[in-house]
Image (cartoon, rainbow, N blue to C red; front, top):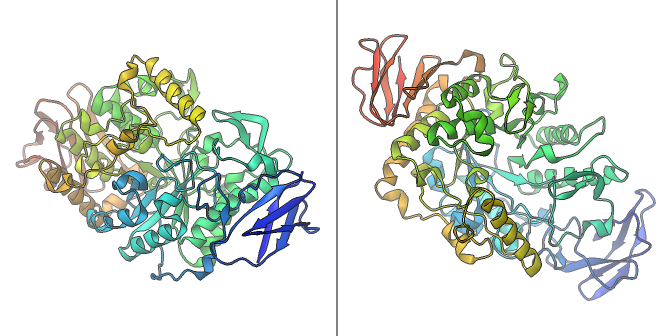
Length: 581
């Protein structure tokens, strides 16, 4: 088979495959590339030595790292895998996503163990699973955002074959699979890319150090590295989409932005494979151009997370006002109302948290609402709290039900975080398993220092390196069948069944949504077509003026009698209802 590697500054490159060495030759048709032919079957370990160095390094495009990021690579032949499902794909419009971390979805922390709960997701009404990153990272347990081999799969999860089995099983249940990929930084542990070539540049700096090289000399090959990695996930693993982590940290000054180039390549692959594929961005820019089609001058990504909606909803539910919640806490229901109708809260307005104006307006008449993901909880918004506490740690079941009603009957593509559907009480904390003692201690100190600055005692901040931190973060699968969790689970199922059955809940028209609210009384109603969703976030019963005549109860957390018969809707404390005509 052909082994090749990009190492533009190397004087010599030697292939080490099994117990043999083979000098590699420059490829005259591809500047900076080296290649060699060698016999190697599936699973054979190999690596490259640069110049006179005795160190054998893993392949930057390794498809498998059986011994972790620091070990040798292994040959993988994707064409040898026999897929069990002929999968037509599931498009993004009409989707309901479920963010899932393989390492804590079950205590076993493997693809095969997670696959045992796919029927639960199907019956819940989920359409797509969004896997958190699965690239190799140090140790056994971690969030996955410190991966280094962007073409490989974390071995403790089950490696490449484990991921393929999981995707096949998900497709058998009618579930699409989306993967979270990280292009904005790699490592730091196990990151050998700088030894091979200019994968990073000091032209720009990010929170993780030198930026990934998207626009400096050598960036053509770096962009190809990222682009082809993304296409490999979609093609070789039959995935349905990718979530791109923190695209605002991709420093790129070229006339053709990398994200636009990637979206064009994904659309071309979709046409080739005859099934829908999509890209979802995490972006802090407040820029609708991220999801504006390329032919209209945008980047052409298919959707983006909407943190503005989350922040508005979170402050309305909890009353928190620290950090970036400050901008939303002055009038939280007004903020919820604005995001429901305009997607972004900051659309050119002043952000106190940033001490500057931020964002720009979403063109509501031309931007379908499904391009924005709406959610009450995510891995970021839970795990980056000091103790990893979910909303269920402080909110009543009624308020959790209100959050579900706003997310699942709202205009955006809904997303749930694993366990949210039953109000899981297990926290989801920040955990690592760094094998480098100095890096482990630096992460531990940094975490304590960060939250100590916000008034937390050091002893209250979980140690990321303590195995108990990960263990606490695993879901308790006994909970969904027990009170009071079973009631909240049934509520989520009812709302998602309603979303499937009612065409008004699939209407992508942001401009058609109507919202009324009372900030002091803490109620909000929004209308989508003939359907109305009303929530009472207060501890007191409320009477809500109900325009449009009496309504028929389609779903209610607490009993609602004769809604709107006398022009009023009466809701019990911390309860909600969905009304039809």
